[in-house]
Structures are given as structure tokens and as C-alpha cells.
Amino acid sequence: MNLLNRSFWAGGLAILLFASRVIAEDTPLVPLQQIVQGTKDLLPPPPEITTNRPTWQSSATLGLAMARGNKDTLLVNAKLLTERKTPWNEWSVGMDGAYGEDNSVKNYEMLHGFGQADHFFTHRLFVFGRLDGLHDGIKSIDYRFTGSPGLGYYLLRQTNVTLATEAGPSVIVERQGTTADQYAALRLAERFEYKFSPTTKLWQTVEFIPEVDKVDNYIVNAEVGIDAAIAKNLSLQVYLQDNFVNQPAPGFQNNDLRLISGISYKF
Image (cartoon, rainbow, N blue to C red):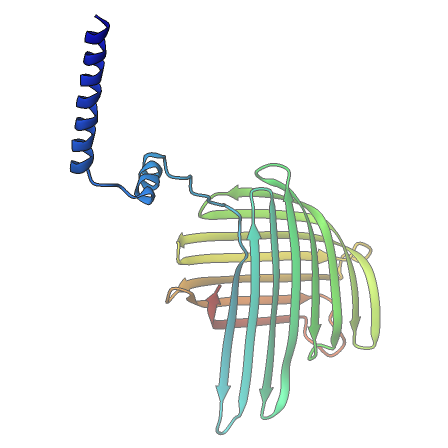
């Protein structure tokens, strides 16, 4: 009986060895790299890493008017604006200027810059801080700095239309003519923007800044314009600026109006 069992197991082992040899000869060898790659294909792909971090949106605008002949004139306008918006904060920094000559005599020299930061408490209510600086060589304004903190509220805040109001105290430090002065003021402002399409928009701003102790000494700055794309990163801008100073320096008019057109590059 023991001999029969031993013969059974020996025969079975011989058959197993013969079968494994036949299978090995008929089956090609698979490189280790293919085996590893095969296991990777069975795993789900790694998730894509995406960020919604807001970026700065900037634009530079240049306008030029020149005439030669019986009258030689030159007028250059330039503007730079950069903005960043998040759900709870907004920042904007800008600068614009103009220089002009008439028969080689300077007749325009203006440089203006501003910076503003907004922080939202709700979808519409926000607190802001703003600083403006102005130099006008023709109107004898060596400098005028205006600091304005305050509260703002969006009456409209939608994808294609916004309307915001702002109010707060201001401090004005200026040198106009031979007189240096500083005084407290109030700033009331409004800004509106409407997008006709992703490539065309209309904007409008106005601010009223009266002196606290002398309400008849006030400044009004207003602007309205339109921006229409003409290429991927290029657009045509046409805007109207109005600056009214109720008490200008002696010898100067109290209102300046400018109609400006230029090519804007967005980056």
C-alpha cells in the first residue's frame, strides 16, 4: 500500500513538472517594466491640481495727437491701470498723465496717480482706503495729495453691471501757486460699469470733495468712457474727463474738460 501511494505521488509530480515545462515554453516572458506599467494603468489617475487664485489685470493706454505746418502742436496722453479682485478684497492702482505743446510752448502738463483698497463685510458693504496725488504744471498745482478712508456700498453688483457709492472724510495737502495748505474735507463718490459683452464696456465715475469748514471750496472730478476690443489684447478707448475746482488759483479758469482717445493693451 505504501508502495502504491509513493508511485501515485511520484507520477503526479512527474505530470506536473511536464505540464509546467510545456506552459513555460509556450508563454513569452514579460519584462518587469511592463508588469509595473500594467499595475499603474489599473490605478485611477491622480487628481489635477487647479487653483482659482486671482491675478492682477492690467492695461496700458496711449493716445497721441500731433500737427505740423502752419501750427505745430503735440499732445500725448497715457494711462496705466492694474486691478485685482477676490470675493472679499479688491485692489486698484492707476496713473495717468498728459503733456502738450503749441508751437514749442508747453500748454499742458498733468500727472495723476491713485491707489485704493476695498475690504468687504458682506457681498455689498465694504470699507476702503484711497490715496490720490496730482501735479498740474499749467494750473500751478505743484502737488495735491488726498487721503480718503470710508465706507462703500454696492447698489448693484452683478456679472455685467456694478454701481457703487462711497463716503468718508478726507485730508487734502496741497501747494497751489505760492500757497501751501492743508485742510479737512468730505469725499462722496460713485462709480458705475456696464459690460455690453465680454469685449465692450462702459464706465463712469464722479467724486465730490468739499472742504469741511468752507463748503464753497470744493472739487469735482468726473469721467465717462467706453472700451471696445479690436484684437485679442488690444482695445480702443474713448473717454471724457472733467475737473472742476470752485476756487482755482488766481488767473485760471475753474473747469477743465478733456476728450481722449487711445489704444489700450491688456496684460
